[in-house]
Image 1 (cartoon, rainbow, N blue to C red):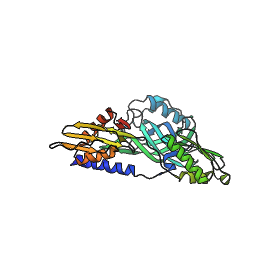
Image 2: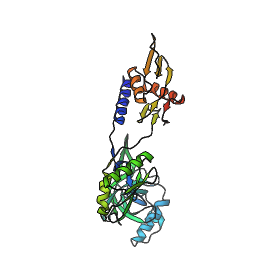
Image 3: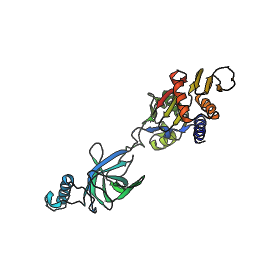
Image 4: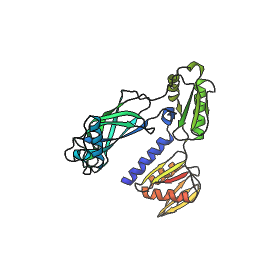
Length: 334
């Protein structure tokens, strides 16, 4: 019964996929230059209850430098403590971030500290790939929860970092914009350019390749780049999808993309006989599934579902059909 339910769910997913409507352009593409940036920093957490690093190679030097900046001259050996842990801080700096805004950060133990619970992160600069400081983090940690219990060597700090400099380009006065598709495809790129040109009543958009569309700002939108992009992002596009079947043999999951066809083929699996595009009649005592030659894989799955085929058998059948060259699409096995 559970196997039949899985197949029924798959059939529903196939139907939804084939009846899917157009997607907003903002959901399948992004504006070049509008993206987040990764930040990282090295710091120390203090105030732990004996759960810090047992080896002081990192923490001694870090504490010595920190106290030196605070006007206290001490040697590293004089500040050894298991109440301190070396940590790595990570964060995502959003596009158009402005100085003074706050970021959530993740703090992860670098050494052999057993827990960061109850600790406080000391002021730590966060850098991007260009090695420039974009934010500063500090605050009391909240340990993270994982399946099966508390994961105490990783902590979160909501609004734990303050952005120190503005990010993002000036978009309002730009005269040209470039969009990139999340899934490059020549047909989709051509549809995007055509839809934008129709909306703007002129040839302002052109597809450079399968994943890039350039847009020139029309005269009515000069100095109004934000309004132009807001309008373009809301346009609905029907993306063209590659005919593909994805199989996860470990979980028994099968995902079938729109447009996957099955050529004329006959297949025998146990006491089941599969015939696509065959006029043979059913014989007594055998389970025969006959499907029209114009069938797609969705029709095949529905028919097998009616016969009670398990997900495991479905995977084997699809692999065999692909090996015979009768599956018109890519077969990807995870």
